[in-house]
Image 1 (cartoon, rainbow, N blue to C red):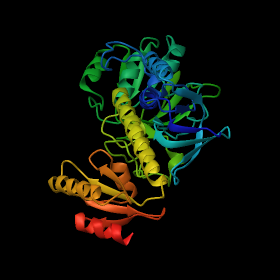
Image 2: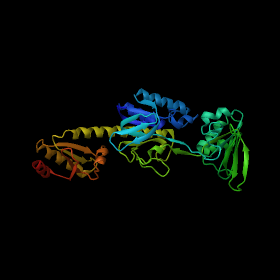
Image 3: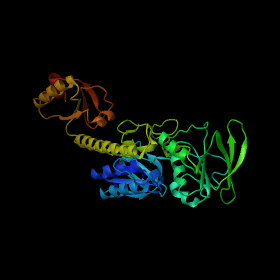
Image 4: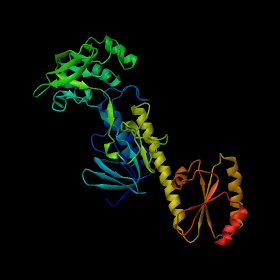
Amino acid sequence: MSELYDIVIIGGGPAGLAAGIYGGRAKLKTVILEKGEVGGMACTTREMVNYPGFKNTTGPDLTAAMADHAREFGAEIIREEVVAIELAEDIKTIKTKKGQAYKTQTVIIAVGSQPRLLNIPGEKELRGSGVSYCATCDADFYQNLHVVVVGNGDAAVEEAMYITKFANQVSIIVIHDEGHLDCNKVSAEKAFQNEKIEFIWNSVVEEIFGEDEVTGVVLKNLKTGELTDFKTDGIFIYVGNVPGTDFLKGKVEMDERGYILANDMMETSVSGVYAAGDSRVKYLRQVVTAAADGATAAVAAERYIAEREALQEAISDKDKPLLMAFWSPVVGESLDFISSLEQAFSETGDKFRLMKVDMSCKKNIAKKYNVSKIPSVYLLKDGKEPVELGEIGASDLEKLLKDN
């Protein structure tokens, strides 16, 4: 593809959609690449009661509204699976399974996470035939039947309660001792009071069996080691998630689990590349925090682009050497420095150009040139790499002009 995007967003969940809204509203050429259904994992949430301003909505309804909002501001949403990414150059390249190559100034990675597999016999073979990871998608197939739920966190217990609207019995397999659940207390109390829910404590699922569809599971008691064949019509698995970041290995810094490391501006270890949502290291993974990440990443990307364009414009004129003065209004000595530098510059003619870089709001230029000390001045001459001059006064500037 020959066109250049300002922002390419990888992932169309709440983080990616929020980034698309902010990118489009900033009049930046923005595209969201999503390999599956727009909305991400949020689309599997049937009942959502904790998104601010929406007392009772659904994941599909909320994310559909986000997608419409992004499109209204001009963001494109394209069904594409990203398989490779090149980040070394200023212009990044995003490659997709269909053979497309998207060129962009910035990238926002919002790939989210996927359900963790048990990796036991029968799981892959019967996936979609009784093995499910999404109650919203599949619970209605189990009208008046019996299903097993594996896990005891918020997602597992809340989804189990949702399944009871259809199934006549739900057995939750819990790894812990009786009475102990990892979910929040409110959900635990509701589940304990639900007549359709039973708990099987100190147990794990060792195998899923059935020919064309699930007919049962093998349970192992962790205290006795006893194996039991347990009849069921289906199994829903909620044992956590893994980030969809395999294609990023060696490209950006990640932790040992594959979650992307990013700062409070969503900046990754690569300039112009941001991470948002459930695929980054963070404390709370919820729709509202994903949306906040996306908004932050898009605003940070917008400022990065503005700084990059300002720098390109400044260095494109090679007729005169460029002085870049790095300063900050929050550093006292830097105020006197920039004032004296401006005065000296005004008295020494027009042989140089002066670019003032406020490091309190223009950190990307400083990062590009590894500027760590302020105030300081750098000289760019004849398109060569900048030379650090440090702190210079009027006499230093006059000498510099005479020597050049």
